[in-house]
Structure formats: structure tokens, C-alpha cells
Length: 120
Image (cartoon, rainbow, N blue to C red; front, side, top):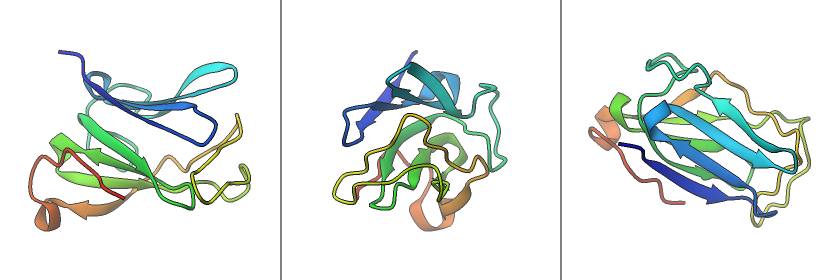
């Protein structure tokens, strides 16, 4: 089964939680590129995902991913020198970068198992 969830930045670019391939993909003026989980291998290390269900940005451009089958929410921090942002709704330049080793923002002990949504 193929499942994905999407969100948009201020420029209308898509960011996709590609659950079936255990990765996050982003679009830009030059097409799509893989951002996280690019090997598509299931895992629980900071740079791997296992059925990412939802994603959201905070006002600083950091990306939060509900990593459902790992029972956690991962926070990928926007590299400070990658672009300027519009703080009402994040707007990224085509070469925006996030650090690939995420930190666990919430785990199954605080959010329960199988998180599927993030509200901001």
C-alpha cells in the first residue's frame, strides 16, 4: 500500500512523507529531491525513518516528522545558513538544507505508539 502525506511551504512547494518508501521528499523549482531516509531502508537511527506518517514545519523552518512505526516524532533542524525564511509560513529557497541526523522530539513514552499526526 502506498501512503503519503503532504505539506506546502510559502512558495507552494510540496514536502511529502512517503510512508511506503520510508523517506521525506521535497519539491523545488528544479523538481523533486529526497531529503531524509533516502536509502529507503527501514531503521531507527537518527537519519532513518520507519513509516513516516505526517510532517510539519515550525516558524523557524525546522521539520517535524511523525515517524509512526518507530513511535517517535523526529525534529530535523534547518541549517542556519541555507536560506532566509518568511516566519508566518516557512518559505525555502531551492537549496534549503536540513541536518540529516534528527533529534527525537517526542517518543512513545510521551506520545504513545504509532503517532500519525502533528498539530502546530
